[in-house]
Image: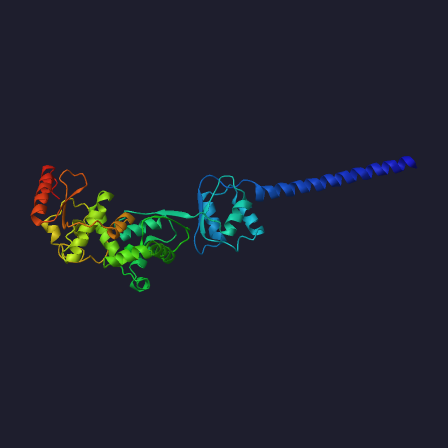
Length: 351
Protein backbone atom coordinates (compact mmCIF):
# COMPACT_ATOMS: atom_id res chain seq x y z
CA UNK A 1 0.00 0.00 0.00
CA UNK A 2 2.84 2.32 0.85
CA UNK A 3 4.54 1.76 -2.52
CA UNK A 4 1.36 2.55 -4.46
CA UNK A 5 0.93 5.82 -2.54
CA UNK A 6 4.50 6.82 -3.31
CA UNK A 7 3.98 6.15 -7.02
CA UNK A 8 0.85 8.28 -7.07
CA UNK A 9 2.67 11.16 -5.37
CA UNK A 10 5.44 10.93 -7.93
CA UNK A 11 2.98 11.19 -10.77
CA UNK A 12 1.23 14.13 -9.13
CA UNK A 13 4.52 15.85 -8.67
CA UNK A 14 5.35 15.41 -12.31
CA UNK A 15 2.02 16.83 -13.32
CA UNK A 16 2.55 19.73 -10.97
CA UNK A 17 5.99 20.40 -12.36
CA UNK A 18 4.67 20.16 -15.88
CA UNK A 19 1.95 22.66 -15.05
CA UNK A 20 4.45 25.03 -13.46
CA UNK A 21 6.68 24.68 -16.50
CA UNK A 22 3.73 25.41 -18.77
CA UNK A 23 2.78 28.48 -16.75
CA UNK A 24 6.37 29.67 -16.83
CA UNK A 25 6.49 29.15 -20.57
CA UNK A 26 3.32 31.13 -21.07
CA UNK A 27 4.63 33.80 -18.72
CA UNK A 28 7.88 33.90 -20.64
CA UNK A 29 6.04 34.28 -23.92
CA UNK A 30 3.92 37.05 -22.45
CA UNK A 31 7.00 38.76 -21.00
CA UNK A 32 8.86 38.45 -24.29
CA UNK A 33 5.84 39.78 -26.14
CA UNK A 34 5.63 42.71 -23.71
CA UNK A 35 9.31 43.51 -24.08
CA UNK A 36 9.11 43.20 -27.86
CA UNK A 37 6.03 45.40 -28.17
CA UNK A 38 6.79 47.98 -25.51
CA UNK A 39 10.43 48.00 -24.44
CA UNK A 40 12.36 46.62 -27.39
CA UNK A 41 14.14 49.01 -29.76
CA UNK A 42 11.96 49.81 -32.76
CA UNK A 43 12.92 53.23 -34.16
CA UNK A 44 15.25 53.20 -37.17
CA UNK A 45 17.95 55.70 -38.11
CA UNK A 46 16.25 56.78 -41.34
CA UNK A 47 14.69 60.00 -40.00
CA UNK A 48 15.83 62.47 -37.34
CA UNK A 49 12.32 63.79 -36.72
CA UNK A 50 8.69 62.75 -36.92
CA UNK A 51 6.48 65.63 -38.09
CA UNK A 52 2.82 65.43 -37.12
CA UNK A 53 0.70 68.09 -38.80
CA UNK A 54 -2.07 70.01 -37.08
CA UNK A 55 -5.34 68.09 -37.37
CA UNK A 56 -3.67 64.77 -38.19
CA UNK A 57 -5.29 61.62 -36.77
CA UNK A 58 -3.68 58.35 -35.71
CA UNK A 59 -3.99 56.75 -39.15
CA UNK A 60 -2.19 59.71 -40.72
CA UNK A 61 0.58 59.31 -38.15
CA UNK A 62 0.83 55.64 -39.07
CA UNK A 63 1.00 56.55 -42.75
CA UNK A 64 3.84 59.00 -42.10
CA UNK A 65 5.69 56.38 -40.06
CA UNK A 66 5.37 53.75 -42.78
CA UNK A 67 6.26 56.07 -45.68
CA UNK A 68 9.37 57.38 -43.93
CA UNK A 69 10.49 53.98 -42.63
CA UNK A 70 10.62 55.32 -39.10
CA UNK A 71 9.91 51.96 -37.40
CA UNK A 72 11.24 48.45 -37.82
CA UNK A 73 7.82 47.04 -36.97
CA UNK A 74 4.82 49.34 -37.34
CA UNK A 75 2.38 46.58 -36.31
CA UNK A 76 3.82 46.36 -32.81
CA UNK A 77 3.68 50.14 -32.56
CA UNK A 78 0.00 50.11 -33.49
CA UNK A 79 -0.73 47.46 -30.86
CA UNK A 80 1.20 49.39 -28.21
CA UNK A 81 -0.46 52.68 -29.22
CA UNK A 82 -3.91 51.14 -28.76
CA UNK A 83 -3.00 49.63 -25.39
CA UNK A 84 -1.46 52.92 -24.22
CA UNK A 85 -4.52 54.90 -25.37
CA UNK A 86 -2.54 57.07 -27.81
CA UNK A 87 -4.83 56.85 -30.81
CA UNK A 88 -7.23 59.47 -29.36
CA UNK A 89 -4.45 61.73 -28.08
CA UNK A 90 -2.49 62.68 -31.21
CA UNK A 91 -0.71 66.02 -30.79
CA UNK A 92 0.95 67.92 -33.63
CA UNK A 93 4.62 68.84 -33.52
CA UNK A 94 8.21 68.09 -34.46
CA UNK A 95 9.43 65.10 -32.43
CA UNK A 96 13.10 64.15 -32.16
CA UNK A 97 13.79 60.49 -32.90
CA UNK A 98 16.65 58.40 -31.61
CA UNK A 99 17.61 55.11 -33.24
CA UNK A 100 16.62 52.21 -31.01
CA UNK A 101 13.83 54.06 -29.18
CA UNK A 102 11.17 51.70 -27.87
CA UNK A 103 7.49 51.91 -28.71
CA UNK A 104 6.74 52.83 -25.11
CA UNK A 105 9.22 55.69 -25.04
CA UNK A 106 8.11 57.00 -28.42
CA UNK A 107 4.42 56.83 -27.55
CA UNK A 108 4.94 58.55 -24.20
CA UNK A 109 6.75 61.38 -26.00
CA UNK A 110 3.99 61.73 -28.59
CA UNK A 111 1.19 61.56 -26.02
CA UNK A 112 2.74 64.28 -23.87
CA UNK A 113 3.47 66.51 -26.87
CA UNK A 114 7.11 66.66 -25.77
CA UNK A 115 8.41 68.11 -29.02
CA UNK A 116 11.72 69.77 -29.75
CA UNK A 117 11.67 73.58 -30.18
CA UNK A 118 12.60 75.05 -33.55
CA UNK A 119 15.43 77.57 -33.58
CA UNK A 120 14.89 80.58 -35.85
CA UNK A 121 17.75 82.86 -36.77
CA UNK A 122 17.08 85.44 -39.46
CA UNK A 123 18.82 88.54 -40.73
CA UNK A 124 19.81 90.25 -43.98
CA UNK A 125 16.69 89.10 -45.85
CA UNK A 126 15.82 91.87 -48.27
CA UNK A 127 12.19 91.17 -49.20
CA UNK A 128 9.32 90.06 -47.02
CA UNK A 129 8.24 87.46 -49.60
CA UNK A 130 11.70 85.89 -49.35
CA UNK A 131 11.41 86.07 -45.58
CA UNK A 132 8.09 84.19 -45.71
CA UNK A 133 9.78 81.46 -47.73
CA UNK A 134 12.64 81.11 -45.25
CA UNK A 135 10.35 80.96 -42.22
CA UNK A 136 8.13 78.36 -43.92
CA UNK A 137 11.15 76.03 -44.00
CA UNK A 138 11.24 76.02 -40.21
CA UNK A 139 7.58 75.97 -39.10
CA UNK A 140 4.35 74.32 -40.19
CA UNK A 141 2.87 77.46 -41.77
CA UNK A 142 3.55 77.62 -45.51
CA UNK A 143 4.97 80.67 -47.29
CA UNK A 144 1.66 81.65 -48.89
CA UNK A 145 -0.17 81.78 -45.54
CA UNK A 146 2.61 83.95 -44.09
CA UNK A 147 2.69 86.23 -47.14
CA UNK A 148 -1.10 86.57 -47.19
CA UNK A 149 -1.10 87.58 -43.54
CA UNK A 150 1.60 90.20 -44.15
CA UNK A 151 -0.56 91.64 -46.93
CA UNK A 152 -3.80 91.58 -44.94
CA UNK A 153 -4.84 95.15 -44.18
CA UNK A 154 -7.57 93.97 -41.81
CA UNK A 155 -5.15 91.89 -39.74
CA UNK A 156 -2.27 94.40 -39.73
CA UNK A 157 -4.57 97.24 -38.66
CA UNK A 158 -5.01 95.45 -35.35
CA UNK A 159 -1.31 95.91 -34.64
CA UNK A 160 -0.80 99.39 -36.09
CA UNK A 161 1.03 98.32 -39.25
CA UNK A 162 0.29 98.23 -42.96
CA UNK A 163 1.61 95.99 -45.72
CA UNK A 164 4.33 98.49 -46.61
CA UNK A 165 5.86 98.90 -43.16
CA UNK A 166 5.02 95.55 -41.51
CA UNK A 167 8.51 94.25 -42.21
CA UNK A 168 9.75 96.49 -39.39
CA UNK A 169 8.06 94.22 -36.85
CA UNK A 170 10.67 91.51 -37.40
CA UNK A 171 13.74 92.14 -35.28
CA UNK A 172 16.68 90.05 -36.58
CA UNK A 173 17.72 87.74 -33.76
CA UNK A 174 17.60 84.12 -32.59
CA UNK A 175 14.27 82.73 -31.39
CA UNK A 176 12.79 79.43 -30.26
CA UNK A 177 9.23 78.32 -30.97
CA UNK A 178 7.41 75.11 -31.79
CA UNK A 179 7.22 73.71 -35.30
CA UNK A 180 3.41 73.45 -35.30
CA UNK A 181 3.09 77.25 -35.41
CA UNK A 182 0.66 78.82 -37.87
CA UNK A 183 1.14 82.17 -39.58
CA UNK A 184 -0.94 84.18 -37.11
CA UNK A 185 0.75 82.64 -34.06
CA UNK A 186 4.14 83.32 -35.62
CA UNK A 187 3.27 86.97 -36.18
CA UNK A 188 1.94 87.35 -32.64
CA UNK A 189 5.17 85.93 -31.24
CA UNK A 190 7.27 88.27 -33.37
CA UNK A 191 5.12 91.21 -32.28
CA UNK A 192 5.76 90.28 -28.65
CA UNK A 193 9.50 90.31 -29.38
CA UNK A 194 9.09 93.66 -31.14
CA UNK A 195 7.43 95.13 -28.06
CA UNK A 196 10.24 93.80 -25.85
CA UNK A 197 12.84 95.31 -28.15
CA UNK A 198 11.14 98.69 -28.22
CA UNK A 199 11.53 99.33 -24.53
CA UNK A 200 11.01 102.69 -22.82
CA UNK A 201 14.60 103.77 -23.45
CA UNK A 202 14.49 103.15 -27.21
CA UNK A 203 11.04 104.74 -27.54
CA UNK A 204 12.24 107.83 -25.65
CA UNK A 205 15.24 108.16 -27.98
CA UNK A 206 12.98 107.84 -31.02
CA UNK A 207 10.69 110.58 -29.70
CA UNK A 208 13.67 112.91 -29.27
CA UNK A 209 14.30 112.46 -33.01
CA UNK A 210 10.67 113.19 -33.80
CA UNK A 211 10.21 109.64 -35.06
CA UNK A 212 8.21 106.60 -34.05
CA UNK A 213 9.66 103.05 -33.96
CA UNK A 214 8.43 102.26 -37.48
CA UNK A 215 10.07 105.38 -38.90
CA UNK A 216 13.31 104.66 -37.05
CA UNK A 217 13.37 101.17 -38.58
CA UNK A 218 12.69 102.52 -42.08
CA UNK A 219 15.60 104.93 -41.72
CA UNK A 220 17.71 102.12 -40.25
CA UNK A 221 17.05 100.04 -43.36
CA UNK A 222 18.59 102.83 -45.44
CA UNK A 223 21.56 102.98 -43.10
CA UNK A 224 21.91 99.21 -43.46
CA UNK A 225 21.75 99.56 -47.23
CA UNK A 226 24.54 102.15 -47.26
CA UNK A 227 26.90 100.81 -44.59
CA UNK A 228 29.32 98.01 -45.31
CA UNK A 229 30.98 98.37 -41.92
CA UNK A 230 29.04 98.76 -38.69
CA UNK A 231 31.42 101.37 -37.31
CA UNK A 232 30.18 103.87 -39.93
CA UNK A 233 26.51 103.37 -39.15
CA UNK A 234 26.15 106.16 -36.52
CA UNK A 235 27.82 108.65 -38.91
CA UNK A 236 25.59 107.62 -41.83
CA UNK A 237 22.53 107.78 -39.57
CA UNK A 238 23.52 111.29 -38.49
CA UNK A 239 23.87 112.36 -42.11
CA UNK A 240 20.40 111.17 -43.09
CA UNK A 241 18.89 112.71 -39.97
CA UNK A 242 20.53 116.00 -40.94
CA UNK A 243 18.93 115.82 -44.39
CA UNK A 244 15.59 114.66 -43.02
CA UNK A 245 15.39 117.42 -40.43
CA UNK A 246 16.36 120.05 -43.00
CA UNK A 247 13.54 118.87 -45.27
CA UNK A 248 16.02 117.74 -47.94
CA UNK A 249 15.49 114.68 -50.08
CA UNK A 250 17.41 111.74 -48.65
CA UNK A 251 18.80 110.82 -52.10
CA UNK A 252 19.90 107.33 -51.08
CA UNK A 253 21.10 105.01 -53.82
CA UNK A 254 19.89 101.83 -52.06
CA UNK A 255 16.33 103.20 -52.13
CA UNK A 256 16.63 103.70 -55.89
CA UNK A 257 17.84 100.14 -56.33
CA UNK A 258 14.89 98.91 -54.26
CA UNK A 259 12.47 101.07 -56.28
CA UNK A 260 13.79 99.53 -59.51
CA UNK A 261 13.60 96.02 -58.00
CA UNK A 262 16.95 95.25 -59.62
CA UNK A 263 19.41 94.23 -56.94
CA UNK A 264 22.17 93.55 -59.45
CA UNK A 265 22.68 97.31 -59.93
CA UNK A 266 26.20 98.35 -58.90
CA UNK A 267 26.18 101.78 -60.49
CA UNK A 268 23.09 103.97 -60.16
CA UNK A 269 22.44 105.76 -63.46
CA UNK A 270 20.03 108.51 -64.56
CA UNK A 271 17.63 105.91 -65.94
CA UNK A 272 17.39 104.41 -62.45
CA UNK A 273 16.90 107.79 -60.81
CA UNK A 274 13.91 108.50 -63.04
CA UNK A 275 11.94 105.55 -61.65
CA UNK A 276 8.60 106.86 -60.31
CA UNK A 277 8.24 105.16 -56.96
CA UNK A 278 7.60 106.36 -53.40
CA UNK A 279 10.76 104.43 -52.53
CA UNK A 280 12.86 106.61 -54.83
CA UNK A 281 14.25 109.17 -52.39
CA UNK A 282 15.79 111.15 -55.25
CA UNK A 283 12.25 111.91 -56.43
CA UNK A 284 10.36 112.16 -53.16
CA UNK A 285 11.29 113.87 -49.91
CA UNK A 286 10.92 112.21 -46.53
CA UNK A 287 11.07 108.56 -45.62
CA UNK A 288 9.85 105.86 -48.00
CA UNK A 289 6.62 104.09 -46.97
CA UNK A 290 8.46 101.03 -45.71
CA UNK A 291 11.90 99.54 -45.14
CA UNK A 292 14.09 98.59 -48.11
CA UNK A 293 15.45 95.58 -46.24
CA UNK A 294 15.15 93.96 -42.84
CA UNK A 295 16.92 96.53 -40.64
CA UNK A 296 19.50 95.07 -38.27
CA UNK A 297 19.60 95.81 -34.56
CA UNK A 298 22.96 97.53 -35.14
CA UNK A 299 21.39 99.89 -37.68
CA UNK A 300 18.35 100.63 -35.51
CA UNK A 301 20.55 101.46 -32.55
CA UNK A 302 22.82 103.51 -34.81
CA UNK A 303 19.86 105.74 -35.68
CA UNK A 304 18.83 106.04 -32.04
CA UNK A 305 22.42 106.79 -31.03
CA UNK A 306 23.47 108.70 -34.14
CA UNK A 307 26.70 110.66 -34.34
CA UNK A 308 26.22 114.42 -34.37
CA UNK A 309 28.10 116.17 -37.19
CA UNK A 310 27.43 118.72 -39.97
CA UNK A 311 27.67 116.28 -42.91
CA UNK A 312 24.85 116.17 -45.44
CA UNK A 313 26.65 114.44 -48.33
CA UNK A 314 28.37 111.08 -48.64
CA UNK A 315 29.98 109.05 -51.38
CA UNK A 316 31.68 105.66 -51.38
CA UNK A 317 35.44 105.89 -51.19
CA UNK A 318 37.28 105.38 -54.44
CA UNK A 319 39.45 102.63 -52.89
CA UNK A 320 36.37 100.34 -52.60
CA UNK A 321 37.21 99.75 -48.95
CA UNK A 322 33.54 99.93 -47.99
CA UNK A 323 34.01 103.24 -46.23
CA UNK A 324 32.65 106.65 -47.31
CA UNK A 325 33.84 110.17 -47.87
CA UNK A 326 31.59 112.62 -46.02
CA UNK A 327 31.12 116.25 -46.95
CA UNK A 328 29.41 119.42 -45.76
CA UNK A 329 29.40 121.35 -49.02
CA UNK A 330 28.11 120.34 -52.44
CA UNK A 331 31.42 121.29 -54.04
CA UNK A 332 33.33 118.94 -51.74
CA UNK A 333 30.82 116.19 -52.40
CA UNK A 334 31.08 116.61 -56.17
CA UNK A 335 34.85 116.26 -55.92
CA UNK A 336 34.43 113.03 -53.92
CA UNK A 337 31.84 111.74 -56.38
CA UNK A 338 34.13 112.47 -59.32
CA UNK A 339 36.89 110.37 -57.76
CA UNK A 340 34.49 107.48 -57.21
CA UNK A 341 33.05 107.69 -60.73
CA UNK A 342 36.56 107.61 -62.13
CA UNK A 343 37.34 104.52 -60.04
CA UNK A 344 34.21 102.82 -61.40
CA UNK A 345 35.29 103.61 -64.95
CA UNK A 346 38.76 102.23 -64.33
CA UNK A 347 37.19 98.97 -63.16
CA UNK A 348 34.81 98.98 -66.11
CA UNK A 349 31.76 98.95 -63.85
CA UNK A 350 29.08 100.34 -66.15
CA UNK A 351 25.90 99.25 -64.40
